[in-house]
Amino acid sequence: MNSVTLLGPRIVRKISHCLIISRKLCDGAFHGDDGCECVEEPLKKIVSEYDSSEGEKLHVDEDWGCDHNQFSLRRGFIENVKLDAKKVLEVLRLDGPGLDARLGLDELNVRPSGILVREVLAGILKSINFESRTRCAKLAYKFFVWCNQQEDYRPTTNAYHLMMSIYAECLEYKALWRSVDEMIQKGFPATARTFNILIRTCGEAGLAKKLVERFIKSKTFNYRPFKHSYNAILHALFVLNQYKLIEWVYQQMLLEGFSSDILTYNIVMFSKYRLGKMDQFQILLDEMDRNGFSPDFHTYNILLHVLGKGDKPLSALNLLNLMRETGIEPAVLHYTSLIDGLSRAGNMDACKYFFDEMIKNGGTPDVVAYTVMITGYIVAGELEKAQEMFHEMISREQVPNVFTYNSIIRGLCKARKFKEAYSMLKEMETKGCSPNFVVYNTLVSSLRNAGRTSDANEVMKQMMEKGKYAHILSRFQRE
Image 1 (cartoon, helix red, strand yellow):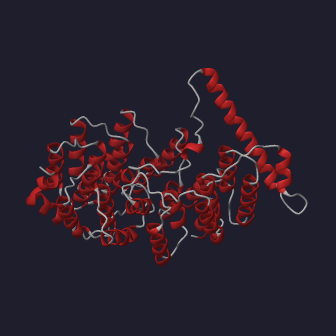
Image 2 (cartoon, helix red, strand yellow; image 1 turned 45 degrees about the vertical axis):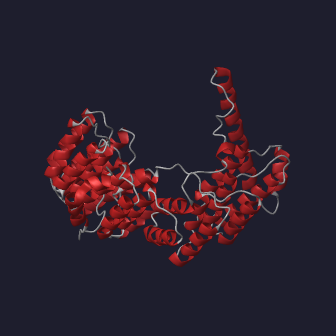
Image 3 (cartoon, helix red, strand yellow; image 1 turned 120 degrees about the horizontal axis):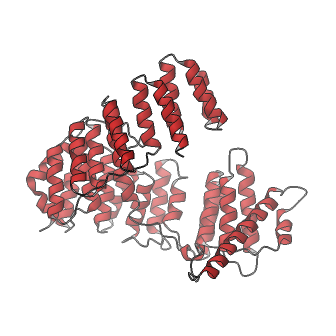
C-alpha cells in the first residue's frame, strides 16, 4: 500500500492542521539566521553537481595505480603543477606597461594543462577584492587567451566556469555572457554549474526568469543526472535559495506537461514551507499519492520539522511509527529535524523525550543534534541543562563546533557569567575552533549592554590582534 495513503485522513489532517503556523519560519537558528540546515542541506546534496569536464579535472587519480612508486610520481606531478602555477601568477602580477605578461609566459616554457589552468584561475579568483577586480579580470582573460593559443591545449568546461566566476566577482557581466556564448559555440554543454554562476548575477527576478526560460529552451543544456531540464533547474534554484522562482518554474513545468518525481515534490514542498505556504502541503501530498509516489527520507524529514514547529509531538510520534511501518527507519537527522522544530516551539520536554528516544532506538547524536538541544535550552533560559548537555556531548566524544560554543557563550552572557563566557572563548581557540563574527558579536554586545565597556574593548582588541573582522570593528567603535 502506498505510504501516502498509509498516512490516512486522520494523520494527514493532523499534519495539515499543524502546518498553518503563525510564527515566522526558521527564526533564531543555531546556524546563523536561517536554521533549517538539518532539513535543507541534505536535500541540496542529494545529487552531486554534474560537470562534463569532471574527467578532465583529473583529481589526478585516474590511470594511477596504488603502489608507492606511482603514488610518489602522482604527488610529485601535483607539486610541480602547483610550482608552475605560482610562477605563472608571479608573471601575471608583473604585467603592465613595461612588461607584457604574455611574453613572460612564453619564456616560462610552461605547458598549459587542465590542472594548471584550474590552479591559476582559482588563484586569481581568491585574490579579487574591490580595488583589484578590474585588473584581475584583465589578467584572467590574458592568461586564458594565452592558453588557448598554445598547441595541444583545449579549454574545458571547468576552465570556462572559473572564468565566469571571475567575471561575476569582478562585475564584468558582458564578458561573463560572452564566455557562456563562446563555451556553447565550442561545443561544451551548459550545466547546472553554469546556471548557478549566472543566476547569482541576475539580481532582479525579471531577469532571472528570462535566464531560466533560456535554459529551459536551450538544447545545449546538459541536465544529467536529473530526470529532465526542469528538475535540474529546480535543484539549482533550490541550492541558491530561490524559492519564489521555484514556484514559477514548477508551474511552467506543469504547463509544459512534464511529470514530477519525488525530487520535484521535495523541492517544491520545502519551498512552500520557506514561503510560509504550508496550507498547500496537502495538495502536494495528494498529488504525490495520485501519481504513485511515496514519501521518502527527505519528505519525512520536512514533515517532521514542520510538525515540530507546530508543537505537535503526538503527530510526530505517529509519523515516526509510520516511517518504520513503511520500511524507513528514522535516522539521527530525522530526530534532529523534529527536535529543532520543537525547540522553536518552546517544547523542551518533548525535545528531551525524542532525544532520548533517538538514543534508545540505536541512534548516536552528532554535533548538530547536541547543538540543537543546547540552543533550545539556552533560548528557554535553562543554562544548567544546556551545560549538562554540553558536558555529555564531550563525554561522548562529540567535538563542539563554533555554533555550539556560540550558544553556550550566549547563555553564559544572559546569566551575566561573563568571566565564564570569556573562558569559553579562550577554550574554543585552544581546541582549534576559531571564533567567528557571531561569537565575538555575542560577547561584545552582551558586555556593552551590561556596562562592561572595558571588557568589551578587550575582546575587540583581541579581534584586531588576530586580524579578525577589521572591516566591522569600526561599527562596534561607533556604538
